Length: 242
Image (cartoon, rainbow, N blue to C red):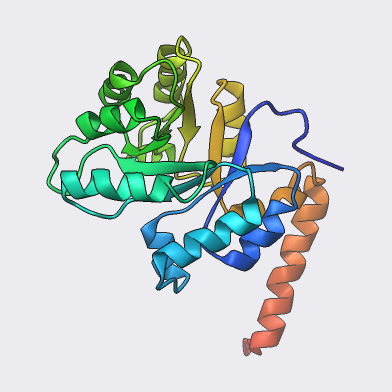
């Protein structure tokens, strides 16, 4: 049974493990893929272009986001054009600023004018959302990735901001809001409820999809059994003094 079939939101798998990408590509719940340099480093990727091309061979026409990694604005522009040339399904991930805090909106505007599809990342404020909204045109697709999980890490509820972003951008049909840095499976339902168009979910969290709708009494019993099994395997003993 497809436990997510009634949701309108598109689920993108976030990771850099090719075996997982291949398996998830066969999952009817997965509409696209994202990755980033940190995930690629963790997965042991050493040849950036080869990895991207391997992913494209698996995912075919599904949207895939690959990130530039230069810190120089001119070089970022050149990298973006090169990455975009590798396939029509590619969205080029561009951070909202470089590491020095220099805004990338001007180069994003230029890329969009040249019909390079962009996924603007590391967005954590409404002002940043508005900046991309203003420079986007009405034709080239652009994804605005708001790091809802990182917002929540600061003790702030991300849902009001995510809702506002969706409402701001809904006039331009070529803009999609993406819920990023997903922490829990329930974030998929939260993002869907506010009409967010996309959520990107780490491979490890996607493994929890079979838990959807599980009886909580059964889950409670399984949890207790897990604790007991682990204690037994560890050989824990407590000497009781009577």
